[in-house]
Image (tube, rainbow over all chains, first blue to last red; front, side, top):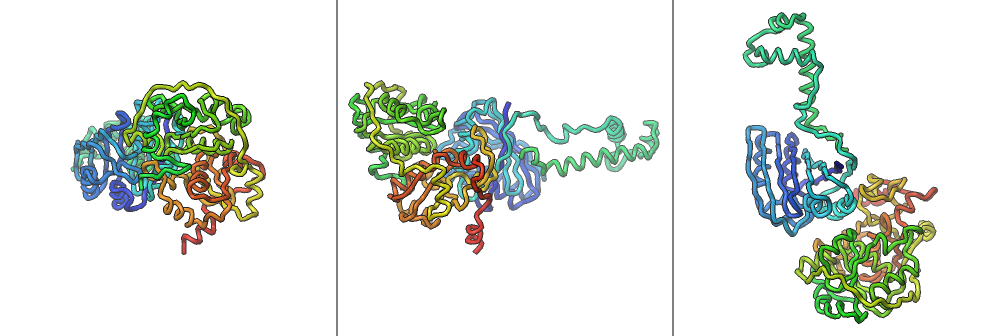
Length: 245
Length: 295
């Protein structure tokens, strides 16, 4: 499996979807997409951020006159299907399926035209940048894809290269993949099971420490270490796109 | 304007549709060649009477890393049933990028009547013009190269000499390649040791000369694009890209459509320049351009 990563930078006003992220710097979105064929693709998009940003994103995605796919001057003519799978105050999960796409070019259509079938895409949008990760069986014609992409970008959009290499990892939900040392994981599990993290607290550190037969200070240290890692992963991991560069 | 006019250099879809019967006849007066960056496109359907040209094997010599030899070019054209008197229409994918290179090569080898189909393969398809999967089989002809047009080609010494003269270099690569941010474009086996551009070169990407449809922009718009960079028909110009193909499209616009008298395509382009010991390079944006944009 090969992967190509690249970013497209957007000026404000150049793209209705990216404008949402530019106008709401705390919003971000992560999607998994697949090209069905040259003229169709689907996307599961998970956006987080302030409610107003999610409202704006939802409105733009459902607006047939606002194309957030095209990278050229022509908006996509397509049969668009969208569905809100999940919506809370700070999360939006949106399913999109575009079929019979014509008269425009997007990353999906160019990839569908030049790269082998069975493509998977990941995107990460934040502020003015949309990072793409394209996973493919073969990169035989990636040069053509790259040249055509570069040639098609309309004014206000610019290209930044990431890398082309073997795909060696599957970045699932960041927190799911977190690995803690055993003693920290044991401490955390014991604390959660005892209701320590359920307000109002149903137990105390002393009680948990007694059950685990360790000093209170040791338990406290292990929990703080685990909490620090999880919190940093949550806050920093959201913005981390360095691995794509 | 998306309905192009037909000239000595460029023909419209309608012009060619009206002549498809001629192109399918064994009579060599009109021949059509498809030159794609992705040669497999031809197999998925092509203009009736069109023959397939593979740029990697037909339009370059992999041993000398240069244009095909005169003998190879003669064999190629003769094999397609082309004579020195034939009208040859070339077209291709990616908005005629490689077709324009073929046009330049035909001109370089002195072929009198070669033309580019405006909009190329994609526009032909968009207009629902006829396609076929029949591969033509024309009687081979004898082809002899009469003359080489050395005045439309620049080599490294020419470019080096131009650095001290009133010659404008036009770099048609993407801004990222021009600024040296992308050293090795993915998927192209054209390793270059250094990123950047030839000192003084203007960055006018090749795609700026075509519409979304792939057709050339109208003449006044084209003059405007180059005029903004201070390039007029009095100017001596050398165009270059990565391997001299994309720059052939810009050469075509300046030399064939706008009639600029002194335009040369740097065949070795950045692959040669970037790998040459001692050849000066610039990175980033030119200071003078930066100053202009800050005003």
